[in-house]
Image 1 (cartoon, one colour):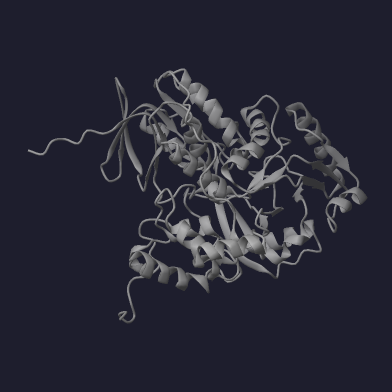
Image 2: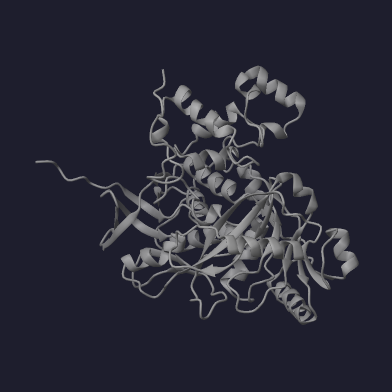
Length: 494
């Protein structure tokens, strides 16, 4: 008789490895706890956390007294130190919220009043000539300037949080879709699609667009998530100098998002978007020709000097809306420790500004955990992330020469568009979390993110996987189970 498998018992089990789940994991890794993360995808941050503008919001858009307002301002103030510890790019470049019509001007003054009530610093209403000094070519009657708005690499931050949490002892189980949860006297027994079982005293639902489904597995039927897709255009990096600050339109009441806007990324690209359309599936990441046309038109209306002839790709992300399409708008975050399901901490509807709020959400969840199990700080917690110091092409010539002398793989460029070296690709393949999908290499090393979108570097990457690591190309997925890049050889290799 085969003995039954006894699942490992954790103090805390987190479902979902997006930016919020990983921030919670890192925060809990400060304490003498056994912590694990379950994620249905093959990498962390594969959903909304890697499919957004990467904006650190200031807090002007959120009703005073709500969790969204409080956590956004707190999270924004925490990001500078957090990104320094994790070696993640961050830049507070400010934002212009532009009124293009007379009837939008009162909205700017309302946003200013609201932001000041939330504790947002340095807000100003600017006239056209003042707007032009910040962003030449911007068009509008007035603008609200928020200097504490910033940008960060969203997938870079998500990966860094996970790697630092893992470095501090958090276990990651990727490709584990949760299909069932049982509540028992000692806590929870979680079952995954492949029949694996994980036990925990405290269970934290950070499943994003699937958070309502996880809640229903423990008998909580209070919430529904309505997926809302936002599509983006990505412009070539060489156009990055056109944008020195973020440019948003004045928002319109009842819309599912903040309107189509221009966002500069920390790596130099410009994003145009996002749109907002309710859809049926929380994983329908399609982009559509109709929306792409709208994005081009509205982007040029905000910044007439901007050309969209250098669009290099499109992508989309899904918002976890709690309001159905007939209502629209925003609902406040749900972050609760359920009294009717003791030990279950429930996060639902964490849409924008979830990225900005993530470190503040993590401290809030840690406080909720402390009410359930005792927390004892670790003296050996390492806040500094190992590795991740930046890209080779960003270093000085002297620093580059020094690295090449130590390792010749720094001297071989694999991705010409982004100037990524073979050593950086090798490091991405040998990542701390053991990710084995092409998108994981893309998010870690920026290969395939340039103008040719992998036309030059992908064959070289496949060659490295084969020759340096012994992988078969057909065994390396694009981003999830079954997303094959190859089905075999046209001609057998010698």
